[in-house]
Amino acid sequence: MIDPLLTLPEVEPDVFDGPPRVGTILPKTFGGHTMAQALAAACRTVDDVRAPVFAQGLFLSAGDTDGPTRYAVERVREGRSMDMRAVRAHQGHREIFRLTASFQSEGPGFTHEASMPNVAAPEDVPTLFDVMDRHSALDSDDWRREWSFLDLRYMEENLLEPSADQGRQQLWMRLPEVEGGEPWRSRCLVAYVSDLALLAASLVPHGVMLGAPDIPRATLTHSVHFHVDPAPGEWVFIDQRSEWAGGGRGLSHAAMYSRGGQRLATFVQDGLIRRRTAR
Image (cartoon, rainbow, N blue to C red; front, side, top):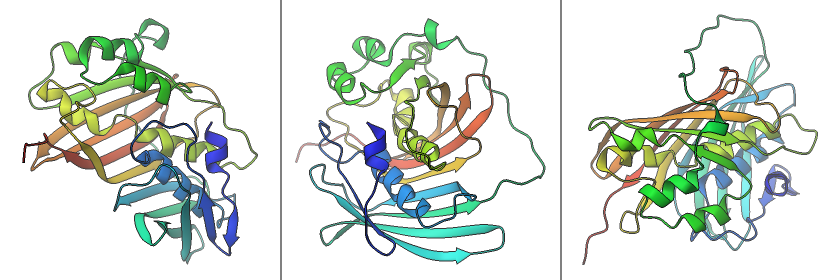
């Protein structure tokens, strides 16, 4: 499912068309879809020896799920050790998204990383959809159809006694295998799934799992720091936290680990979370 979305035809020099996701039931384009395609367009203009190490997206307008998106890449900098790209995404005459990304060749340097939390194995954790049936106001069947290509497990205990001042969600996710020989595709996959449920961590202190019909949600900014490529088809653990919400916005961050505990990526997201009021 992911591979066709990352295969963008080049229609002009440094300009690419991204296809919509066929069969989606979402009312607007999933943010991870737009971010992954914008990053894929940027990667097409950089030598494969330099992998994306950082990407930040600014969501300007909701994307239409029916039509393609055009991505125009600007070659901001080509340095001795790093490249930088900027991407603008348009649907028709409407700009919906901007991306900045940095690329770097792997090299020596200082290293450290925090340990992965001690959690149950994914086989011993209930599916996201079963937990939704018990705790969420959203339709789990819709989520099953939309995310059928992912095996998702959700740590239910974070919902049973939630903290009043910090939201936390912990998920296991089995990533689909990515076809194609380009090494950057696995990081575009990480960008795609990084958006899944992240903003909803800021709703957990308020007794809400993932969302509710009267709580519209919209991502404002989203960033991904890429550390290590995941193995094809492996389980990854995502530890999501939200330590602040206010003014109708929530701020969440997350760490992605391999099953063996290696830090793969770090995510940060800011978005709108507020109850719809009657007019």
